[in-house]
Image 1 (tube, one colour):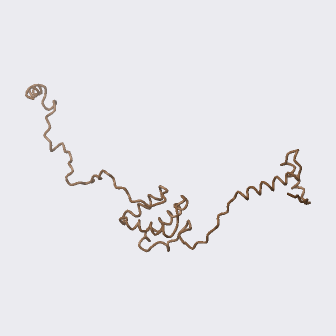
Image 2 (cartoon, one colour):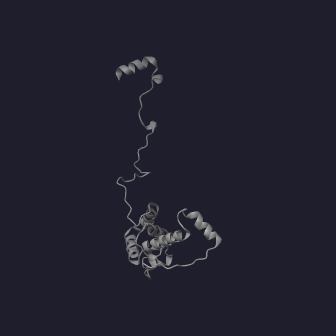
Image 3 (cartoon, rainbow, N blue to C red):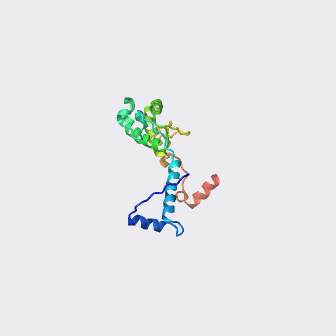
Length: 175
C-alpha cells in the first residue's frame, strides 16, 4: 500500500495535547496515525441499523388519549402511563399489539380494568393480566348471624365470695 505524505498545521494547544498523550518513543505523526486507525476501527464496528419510516402511531413511547378507543377512555391516563413503561421494558409497540391489549381489557369485568392496569404499572409488566381472585372468600364484616358473647345471657356458676366459705365447701362436694 502506497503512503502519501501530508503536511498539517496544528494550533499550539493541539500540539501540547499530542505531546501530553503520546509516549516518548512515539512521534507526533505516528500518534496521529494511531488515533486515525482507532477511529476507523470504532466506526467500522458500529452497525447502523436502517431506520424504517413507519406510520404506526403506537410505535412511539408516548401515546395520546385520542388513540384510545371510546369505550376505554375512562382508563386513558392509566393506558398512557403504562404504554411508556411497556416501551421501556422492550415490549413491542404496534397498532396490532395495541388492538390486542384493548381486546384483552374489554374481556375483563369493568370494575377490574382499572385495577389490572394499576397492577401492570406498579409491577412493570409488558402485558395486562386478569386479576387473581383469592382462594379464601372474605368473611363478611356485619353478618346478621354473628354471635356476640354477653355475660348477662349466660348462666355462670357463683363465685366463692358469693357463696361464702361454708356454702363453697358444700357446692364443691355437689359438683
